[in-house]
Image (tube, rainbow, N blue to C red):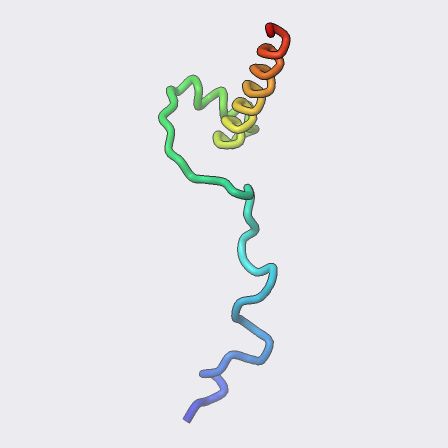
Length: 74
């Protein structure tokens, strides 16, 4: 015989919309990279304490400036 403690109260638990940890990045992919200590320090500063964010910011900056320099030299 099931007691009331064996059953979850109605309306609690289970999957529901919006539950769980929100995604930080859409379509992100986890990778491992090796960086020297100076690059880690720079990425930490650029990313305000977050190395991954610092790498993303630096790559976006590089990509943006590479495209500009290619279009001005053509």
